[in-house]
Length: 566
Image (tube, rainbow, N blue to C red; front, side, top):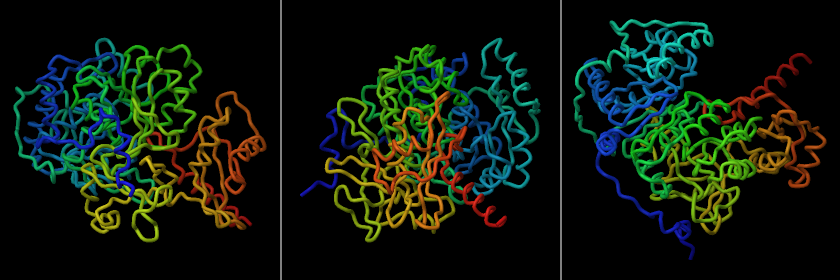
């Protein structure tokens, strides 16, 4: 009889099959690292370094200030920042004050921000000067009582700190000056304050929320995923076990993935704090800046997303940069094309493997092995330690046989408590203790899992089920293709038909006929795209996930407009 956890048989001996967790809250690990590595660099940002001791003491000062403003245990405090040092200081300061962090995307419009602040009931927000007008416009309609403001220039070395405001004005066209008075507070002034003291607010790590992580909002309104201290700690400890060759206190982690996205938050920020690693922060992804940073700062670890790796590989000056410091990368947020994986490894000499997860699981549940075991092409890998996974039948909800397609389901200590103020949706997401991911996939006999697609993204054309990822993998192999996404669009005869939206590499040329001929060599005829649309760029989330839904909606609107005109 086949084991219900066959993946444990392929674990290398260095990865434990079970883990133990200390009964202490997330913020206590910053204290531990500050004691163990007080003078080690915790954050490098655009030439400025902050030690673990400095980050810890700044977080303590912010925590005391939040308490003085009336923030109590369980109160929600939002962070609306890119990857800059205050994003880390605020995160741990809020936890030290007993609060719950609400991660907020800095690109949100006022409408999106107002919705999230109302839904979460946040009482305060930490943001930056350029975002202050947006936040202050929204605040009166929400429960926000205090706005704490920081600025990039406050964390730059001389003379960058003097020059940057002029650059900022040129790029954004605005200058924002906020006074430290009333309900507006300057982080710079807060951190000049008193001697840092620990608040020692008791935390139930199993049940107290550390984070409300709002889902990306690609379908309907974003939902607040309730993640406890235990959820986040468990996932960070799993990451530590998986990356067993990393040396405590000695690695440098490139922080390109935004911390307001749970993947960057866990794999870069929390993991680095727990393990004493240096974080090299970039406030946004720019291929040229990222290449220069890798060459200069020599990061050893580089969690990312496929679009980030694609952006680097397609930069015209790639060959001029030395990327050989990179040893390990786990890619998440979207499927990793095999061709991109292989090219990136050739360029860096490091390992790039695909992982899998979702906001509801803190986020990682699966990954390929980085070292010592062969990886499986096209697979998201095997479940991480302490994580159970199964493929459940769409008809019966029961586990299916190997290689049979069903819905991927998860159990484990990283699985969320539920959705904030949405008991009905929480109940629908769980079945017999399993978290239903909404992803279709299968497991092979060795316990390797494969995602074939989102349930709702499956294309049904002429009665055949077509999984966009399979078509995308084939088209990515064409030398002219830089980025693409495949989706189902309405078809009067087939119900739906397959459409490919494609961005070509700079200077590359290819016709629809040539792509069709290429696709037919590798795909059954019913899977071959019937429509190709060449675009300059594809719509994406801030973490680089291509928004298939936006493209489909654009097409639906065009079709509707055509019908009206007819």
